[in-house]
Image (cartoon, rainbow, N blue to C red; front, side, top):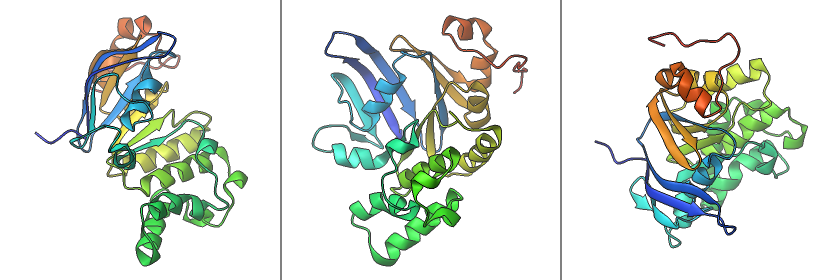
Amino acid sequence: MSVPTIAVEGLGFSYPDGTVALHSIDLHIHPGERVALLGPNGAGKTTLILHLNGIHMPQHGSVAVSGLELSRDNVMEIRRRVGIVFQDPDDQLFMPTVRADVEFGPRNLGLEGDELDERVDATLETMEVADLAERPPNHLSFGQKRRVAIAGVLAMEPAILVLDEPTSNLDPASRRELATTLRALDTTLLVVTHDLPFALEMCPRTLVMDEGRIVANAETAEILRNDELLKQHRLELPYGLSIAVGD
């Protein structure tokens, strides 16, 4: 059995107003897995992913990334290992050109010269934005910005890539192109989404969260065939879409 890329054990967290956001969460994601995280608004999904790279620190339980347990002493290394791409790419793009944005992270790791150039070039190619390298990010379409934001995180070579609502505000063609690119990545993925068909397309395994708890953990098709489970946790497939046995 491989060392989990993400190992969450008994994770509990409450906000200062007393709201309990996470109740004893247990979660393992292994190298190379692609896992979807579903749940209604307010389920605790964002609170959970903010623990994965130390933006929130555990009040109870533990978080480990590739065997390294999260603590205040090693939070910077944890943040290098866990790359989070937030829902709004404008929150992550701040340099004058696409290339400068993508090289910002590895440059701050100490990369320079040919090694830096090769990593940035490879990442731009992987995300199919090499032709945008000298463009200002604020001149890009929303879909292009999302690709550049992902490239900036991938350039750090994280152990896991966490995508928060990656298909929001994308037109159908951009959504399809992003899915094709992501499926080709040799990277462990955790995809937080309300887009259930995208979860089915991308992720063999799905977790469902509600009220700060993981309430289901199974193959994605099995989850999406469970009408009672979906209804109970305010999840809906698009009208007319059904998941056949064997999907």
